Length: 80
Image 1 (cartoon, rainbow, N blue to C red):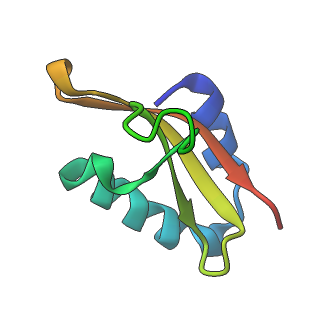
Image 2 (tube, rainbow, N blue to C red):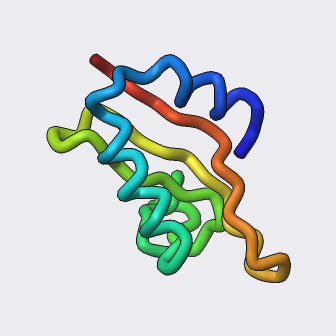
């Protein structure tokens, strides 16, 4: 996780942390489950996004590095 994303996680309300933890667990086993950040131009892109928070108020932006078996969380977005 980038330092920027870690700071964003630290600033989240405690009540949304379980939903974020569910996304992190999903990314461990199915990183391609998220949507491409630019689905029209590059639907198979390694930079992806996945919502969290129930009503679409949050999202995780991440990069999949298949050759390293790594998912790097780049940004956490929360509107609330």
